[in-house]
Length: 232
Ligand SMILES: [Zn+2]
Image (cartoon, rainbow, N blue to C red):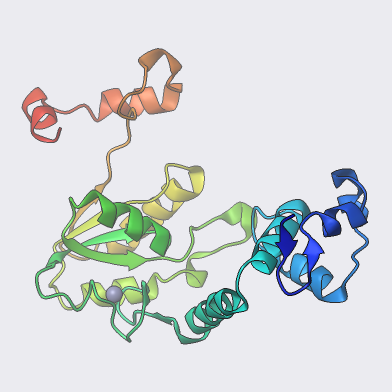
């Protein structure tokens, strides 16, 4: 029988202790230590109590050293992570690896909502410029104004005159459009080419299932056929 390491208990003991899965809403834990661990995992996004309990059970089955390594990695990440002083990307140093890379094109800055967007764009391997992370979008409905975002530092970056193009790579939402509109006004006094990532139909998509706004934008921002071929 598979045992919970160090506890010498059948693996399903803890589950059986609670009866069936339905009881998990009003969980009664046989151990305060496990209850605390489950509650800690359950604070993470997308992790409910059931999943949290599974994760705890998983850790109990592994060597104690594995859990130590996991907790140390999380703690080290949380306490030592920095944000790039230039673009606000996550970084191990004061200036991130993208900003300090001499091979990157410093005349182009791509504006993104958060550093996850940088990871997504970097994974395409089709962009060699710099970034600027806003850390949010202007959202009057949620009470988020421009002063709460990294907009002032973006404007300061334009002062050197080194940047020639700004690419708005923000989500195609009302907040995204509001932010693009605001930034365009803020940056209008600089000699910049301001562009936005194309919004259109996803590769492999079918026209009849595309929403009207996306389809309309796709037609409005249609490309010459030669450009389409070059980019695919
Ligand atoms: Zn940076």
